[in-house]
Image 1 (spheres, rainbow, N blue to C red):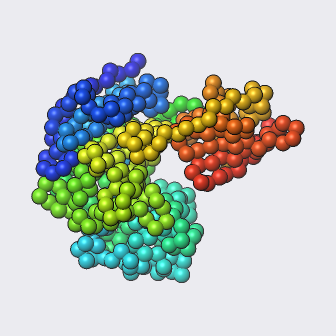
Image 2: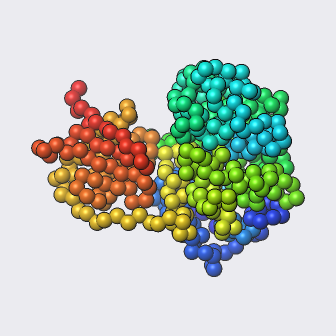
Image 3: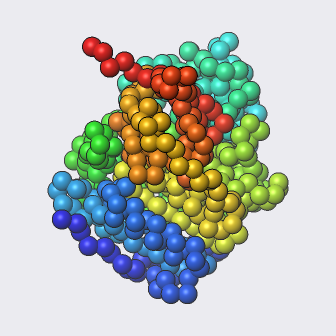
Length: 471
């Protein structure tokens, strides 16, 4: 049984006066830009083929809500249909909120971005972490990498304890030398907010961002209030070839404290209010949150990554000194917000399907539809079926089992935590993902056997060895 779709229902106004920030009633798609219609069709297809358990799509253009629609389930096992304006766990889409709070403190002269973090956090007063600056944290150039010394932040009793442990171990790379996206960076920014203001970061964000932007359905910490809990979607992850529920609205959050790097629960409408403030260059109605110069500067790509600014993903950087034509952020439970200032539009795509790469697909798809990037042009190549047969089987990729299976167009590459990735042949032994910047090259011996492959993501390559079938 599948729930019915909710088509084109009217949504509440955002009560913000400028720019892209105040949508009217939902409009019919007739006469809309081709890219808007294409996005709608793509999301509908993903639900139809089982790519996601459920999805909410919100598109605001020229101050009108042109799409606000849901597909699928808020909880599949309970047959609880997804409804408009339900509350999602947005994970790393929390990062721009924390970054905004830090920039507000900098504008007020309470911190300086080039100050060492150790100026405010005693845990960083070590030879390992002493050179890390606040700017490094914002750009993810601190040298920290993903994870904590104990593994997960859920293995700690408090944010202070987790950050102190990361600082004591120190960054993996010298600060300011490499870009590595790291939750510890944002966690440390959260503690800086507290150290400077004397206010917990979640309270500061609620008071200075949620309340003035009228984000009434946004929570840094999810309480026990039944009316709120009933609107929260269950979350799923891909495991054993299907989506399985790993958290629902009756359970306590895995992290009992505000983790700063991810932890906010909110609706797509609420997040659009926040995104609109950035699109309107720091203004929301008559309230100014940040100066326009700060907005522009904070959205420029960092010195070590063309795709990441000050706690914002930059999907299209544009000219230096101007707001980029596409920016936003995603979350690991399957959420995405994209701002498109040149088109006075924003797209918010919320799912609760961890393991789907549909958010990454949608980023690429929108950029292609708007002409910011070109569609991948792959050569047609038909490999010998016997040769492809030599590729199939299990490989060890950094300690994780990945399986190569035959596919009607090429090969499927899957692990236990992701929806299978499908690659098409472009040359002998070489396969490419048709959309994402990924590829596989199979290393074949003279006798035709294949015991090794090279998986490429962007400009990084990882070797994987065939797993032994003995024992």
